[in-house]
Every structure is written in C-alpha cells, then in structure tokens.
View 1 (tube, rainbow, N blue to C red):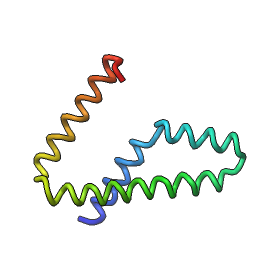
View 2: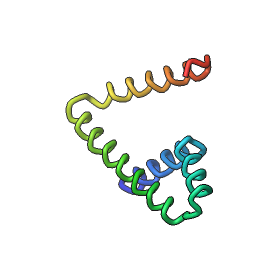
View 3: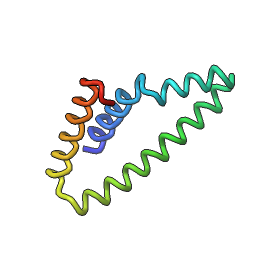
Length: 90
C-alpha cells in the first residue's frame, strides 16, 4: 500500500507540475542567474515546504470531514476550475 500511494503521488504531482508557471519561473531564474544548482535547491525546498503544509492541512481536514465529502468537494472544485478555464474566466 505504501509504495502504491508513493508512486501515485509522485506521478500525480510530477504531471501536475510539468509546464506550470512554477516550472517556467524556475527556467527563467536559471537563465537569469546562471546558477542552476542554487535554483534547483531553492525550488526543491520550496516544493517540499508547500507539500508539508498540504500534508498537515490534509491530515487535519481528514480528521474533521469524512473522505466522501472531501472527494465530492475536490471534484466540484476541479470541474468548476475547468469550466472557468474553458470559458476564459480565469
């Protein structure tokens, strides 16, 4: 179960981060500063910190709200964001 969750999380986060504004900003920082190692470590630590916040908040929410409701709310949020993007409102 651990490895399945780990690989699923890796795949989801990896695909979600490809081509997003964070990756573009990272590429610009490397081009601007010519210090790929510093940019890599800065970006990696930032992603780890934001992930820690997500894990802590998610753990707290999971104790208060049933998982079914979280799934439904996440689905509604993704559909709403998709619709807004589709119609040019975001």
